[in-house]
Image (cartoon, rainbow, N blue to C red):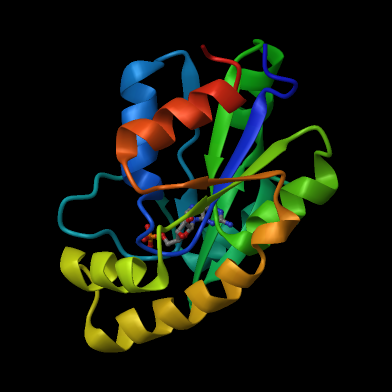
Length: 185
Ligand code: 5GP
């Protein structure tokens, strides 16, 4: 069994956190991925309540004030993203394995408030490959890409704060490594 049921997966933009997470959930449906809240507007293919809870600044701030956020952060300099406390606590109460896919600030907050959480850093095989993935996916304009790469440099430098680093060179290998760390194998 994993020593912890709460797993934090962080890593720089475009490293493939979403892809690795989806592949992990396909293979291990017992893992719970909570749906975060964000003030960012949805992308064309995103569904409210599935990819994120898309909420207003006012709703987000009210959740912070009422203690409804397990962690939250302003990511890439503007929009707020946060993990809703209630679904995480409920899943952990049920003895389920919960995965949080969050940014560095959020990971630091969870590390402080939940010392039993296992914090995993998902790293790219190289900086050049990270740039290639970000530009290749084409979901951000050049200005936003530059902003995200700037954040990514800071995130890469924080790698040593994590319990373990998994390199996302090959998705299947990364998923197996994560599953092993989570005690799913
Ligand atoms: P995107 O806008 O591409 O969906 O996500 C941008 C970043 O926000 C990602 O790096 C992701 O890890 C982070 N993020 C998503 N949900 C949360 C959350 O609930 N809390 C925190 N702290 N970061 C999040």
